[in-house]
Length: 428
Image (tube, rainbow, N blue to C red; front, side):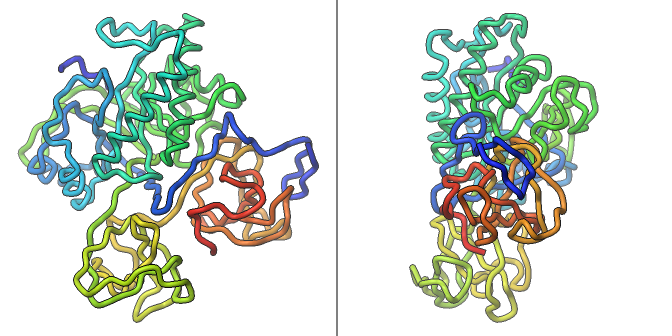
């Protein structure tokens, strides 16, 4: 990708001696109000310089529906004349998903001799600074909290023990700071260096675990499983991407771009979408008419919608729109393409958190008496749509409803609390 141009027994789990993680490896994500995660499944491409709007329009005929964009970093080498908040708004309205990439400091033992390197004496400080800068760059482009940013760590000498430890400390600090600022942590790494070492410390309490891993392996296979250096038990639920083919030209709609090929099932960037109200309408603190009114918008007001969810029926629809300020509007009075169901490209509302133990049962309802319908491994993302009360597990009676309709106890999910509800998740 790097461009050289420019302690208790729990009946719900049948596990003993397990306590929720308070820190590494599954650090909490502190989501502010209005946060929304976007999961993309499908083919993607990345290219050094963000294409023009005309090029992106032409490429709507391609098999790709997402693209990587280099939002910053001291080693970003290509000019980005297109990369503005206006461009982000325009291409996402076309239906494109965006994958923010931050090309920061590289491993001290990187073979990229011209790259600026991580200092072995301050990897944590530098990782935190990189995440802070990436956050600022993302927000300046209109990217929302809850989305992912991918730190690009190019191939390095995996046999250099001290260098590898420096990289892991840098990426751990990157993850913790992004989580503190409300973003998901992604990493782009070579399968034989960064991916290998992150897998080796997957369950280590010495390092914060990234939420998603995007590997480089140019073997022409887009498979997201059976990677040679990463167990299939790691990063299992919407947490994987692969760059499977390197620099080459492809042409769609008469436009040729030099790209890398990628396949994703992972979080990507999140944005707001502008729509107008069709009558005077009240915004509420939750997606039903029972919630308090927090604002009133006159007819014709432009509102920024981040995602859609279900609530009480108004007119012909049970769909509600979550705005980027965290309030909700019934979709019946907003000019989205449909007033009966979800409207593309708006995603469904969910926020992901890592699980803190292996073998976490997914159940058909919010309690240990409900049937087990599956399980989540350690570090898997629980894509939570809402929270509700259920049977007590450990210190909490809170349960999380996931996007697939199953339920998990909140005790083993790295939300902000394991005793009560976590903002800004709504109540079911």
